[in-house]
Length: 295
Image 1 (cartoon, rainbow, N blue to C red):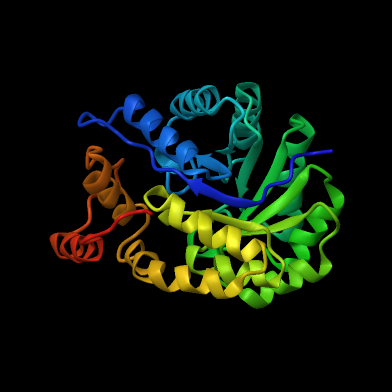
Image 2 (cartoon, rainbow, N blue to C red):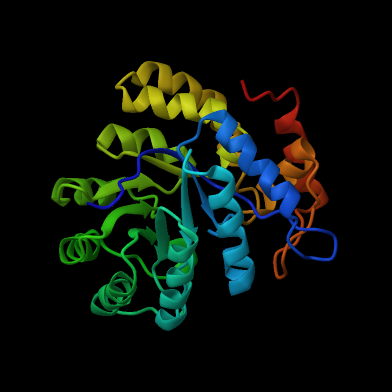
């Protein structure tokens, strides 16, 4: 029986030093904050963690640090996907050796495989490791939508595929997946603002950005929603609305890394081609943050 994932999992940023290297002490400090806040897990080296521009060795180092620091208290999920199946398999093996609970495997981008190619890509990972796999459908980044039909086909064919991070922003597609899903295959929202409606349809949680700096408040929203207290969840949804919007004033993780710089004193350093938000965006973010407390 493979691990199932539910609740709030934070797509954690990757802090960097001025020379562009990993800021390991700050990373551990942020992991500690997530554990203390009571989140269900962290996703390390996903889109928000700038996984696309980290080296394989950097990723492995971050997974090692996270697994050791979390020590089983919360889930550690590794972002291992790429558009190269062999590279994805190799990274997945290395992540599994670190002891992560799950692998986040994005739809291959740029080369845009057919549904059969998408299935073969995930099957290659599953045949190489026994770790739980979460599909990651984010057509805005990959250029390809993994359809509900394809996701269900993959889940039916591969028992270790336990969930999908659905970031298509298409609730109709999410509903179609939920209606056809086998037992043990769950939907996690991939857009912060859609966590509540996803759970209302039968989803089990979210992989989130805002929870980098608002894990307590967002965690309460998710717990209320999973308990069926949608009135209380909606109240928090309205409170977090400006932050959901702020995180996408520019390409993620531009805004969230700036916010973490402001709130946690991490360096404002990105891995090119990402750069710091414009002065105008920083001013907008400062306005949103005025008086912010994660309580």
